[in-house]
Length: 183
Image 1: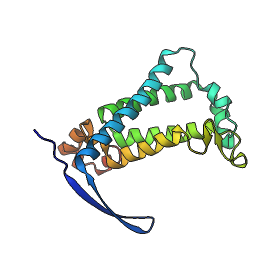
Image 2: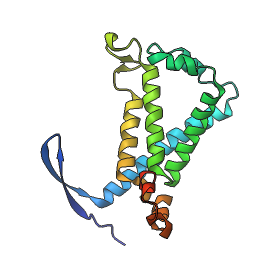
Image 3: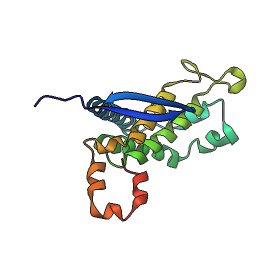
């Protein structure tokens, strides 16, 4: 069976300007599925590594932060619940993305985690130019945040994922708020 390109055109307004471009439905599908699986692996692998290391704790990271809004990171340091939230959060996000289950919820949770990790990795704050390990402002946390935003926005769980099955169920129509979690 030959693969067709299925070209579509999208028209929208971005930053007050009309934008129109054509795209391939086929390649968008492949790229979204690939991004979803890669992000799933990143989260799942990070969670597994932490889970299998009995000495792992978020305390080292939290105590090493130089920018600590309202003492938030210091307060969380050494709390077993924080360690569990990081480990099991990463595992759940990875599994959700991999299986395409509750992808918008997983993307939001992963994005929130990336914002917190990014804040914790800032060295010196605004007056120092927001330096981070490999430059200024943009780190892998920001890249992952934007990828998760795209995955959730497109509803990538509908592409060979369990979210497509969930949204096909009769009971789903009776609960429109579920659309914020699936996709």
